[in-house]
Length: 625
Image 1: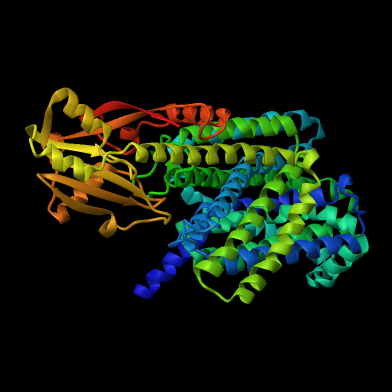
Image 2: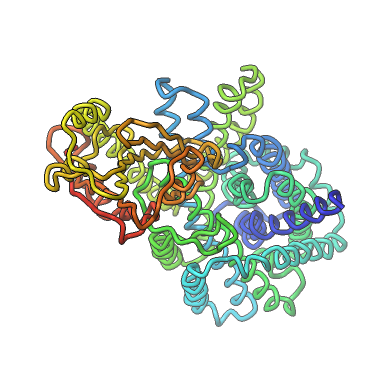
């Protein structure tokens, strides 16, 4: 029975992975072949070139996705979690904070995460726009309506995010299974007509194309890479499904379906060259265009949903690791902790997506922007992976170099090919990434400056309590909980309370939150209680970057240490920090201004840590940076 249940669970996770993990790469056949043979790339449409391009795509799927991501990168899990943020945390953990590598690795990881945000903006725009362009294939007169309909679909998609995906998420797997089945069947239909396309499985055709065309082949790489977009999702979603279902879904369903469809599109172009304007929609003839538009639109929405959910997850991780200010996080499912909605991230992303659709106007124009964001993230992943397997896993240096340099060389080639399109749309994700990178680095540096200032003026807590109880103040009924940072000595809220009210509660608890560079901290290790004497206690609470901060819940865990709390007899004292920019120190004036603005608009600490608002007393404190 246990064996049968395990098989059933594995099958369910694999089906779910097909829907959520592979939505992005699964919609790549909509536009890849069309873009490769677009006039701007200068690739002549003949049988030799078609076989060369299809061979490059097939072997790219084998080397980049199957070998790099599915075989190597999925092994670099951070306590079961994946994604660029988890990989960055793992790389930082592999070197000490005093190491010279620590800051460069932080910067590298932040830039990779920033590019991921850029990719997250372009994926919905590209996928939905490509799907909608099928309308103009069937009815050219409807071309002016492609962009407006795309915007309507995207606005509707983002408008329902607050409802969560728990309900419709169950349909993602079956729908995408239908999608991949259709891709495979369309491919087989066209392969039967032109079976000689199967020789593209021979890598010699890709090599021959590269040698003969040289610069032309290099330019074509910028479009070929569109077939691999979404490969980062394999790693980012590992925490939701585990590596085995993701591997099973790829090798048994996704890879065969994609390979067959690209072969089928190649066969179609060999037999029917005039289908090059949009080979995806011409695979079955005119009768199939509208049904394919409907199915591809649903698949594109699922691919977009996966990216949007990934953005929410990435933002939450960045907040927990101290790279972004606190934001409102809404849990959309009582059962699934990963089902979250972040209003600020949702509406900002929609704003940029709408701008991208209107600004670029077509999937062909967006293709340049799409490739550079994806290959940039892939490049950073390869670099971080080296540090993880070398310094974290302690593998032999030669083995580490061999394992990563091969993939690094491919990533550099793909990124370089896309970098040539910088002035033709490639600037968009780079500029967006630089803006997000600046915001994250500024927030991180600003918090460090606040930390240093508080540490410099901190009064040691133990010494203060010793002197306080020489002539103790009047003690009143109840428990007072004071939040104090890792750098703080005596909380400002306690000093103000003693100064103005001249009293102290009969039990005083100091809480310090520690954010760990790991995804999860188990309940058994979540709290540490230290008795400071005179009914005063220090409680240290440890959170991973995927744990949900909840101070009342953490206090309940103190019961196992002999410290119990009555909610209606517990008051929380919080210092509200007002950041003041002081000239001549810290960061540049514009960065300090940016940090102050973010600090003022950050989510309230009591709300973020789920403290009941009717039990909170806030005390102001001014901090210079």
